[in-house]
Amino acid sequence: MPVMVSDIRLAEFDAAEGAAFAQHCKAGLGPSVWRGGASMWTAVREWSFERLRARFGDQQMRVRGSDQALDVFFGAVGEREMTFSDYLDAILAPQQDMSRPYLGNFLVNHPLMVPEVLRLIDDVDFPEIFPELASRQFRIWVAGAGQQSTIHNDNYENINAQIIGTKRFLLFPPEDHPFLYAQEVNESLWSSPVNSNQPDLQQHPRYHQARALEYTLQPGDLLHVPKFWWHQATSLTVAININVWHLLGGELDETWSERLASAGQLIPRDKP
Image 1 (cartoon, rainbow, N blue to C red):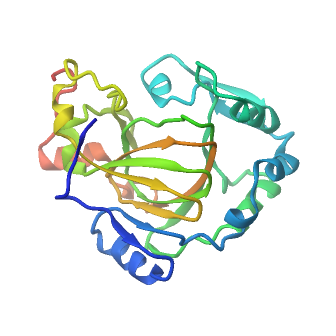
Image 2 (image 1 turned 45 degrees about the vertical axis):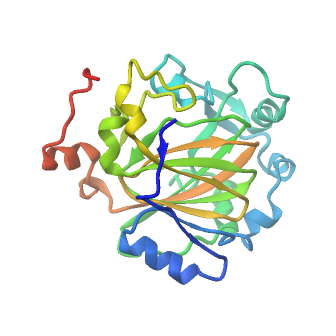
């Protein structure tokens, strides 16, 4: 595991401190949690797996073949189609020794999305923290217990809401990238091949120097992951999250490659 340290911190705000949470996010002071900030949302109060099955059970979904993102980004696992009802059966079944499929990164407000799915946005009420940014993308993540992302970063501000279940986040500051061995997956995504559960310190010896914050989201919590902060999410139970990414749009969104190049910090990927 990385070192859990106190020289970086995750700010925590209670349910009545929404204005302070927003101010902290705007000021660029690092990640923060608004505990209970979404507790009164319709999604948190009324969503359940069976209610969602009744609404969307016959909907065809494209899912990842594995809920372990290392298998997807650094393996040969692809995607497949299944109905939402079949997907729920897969993730609600007792835990097996193999990974499950994963419905993640599903763009709710896609221009061609069916109206019934678009109406999910009516059940959330994300605060308008970054009104100067051009657009917002709402993404939903429906996971079985044990689902895990890679350690990765995004080139936009991220507000993540826990709707059902619990999810643990590890967060690393951007400047710790030499310790994470991240590789460019696409223009907007860099991802680390390090297995944080069982890191191979012979292959990735610098990983032990990485500084991590750890926080477990409960239903109704909101987490701000600032642009370029490295993070990993692990579902501790079956879980639903919905997040909003704030984008400038097009070429205006700086990429991590551009950030590194401007700082002269591009690290050769083939060296430990």
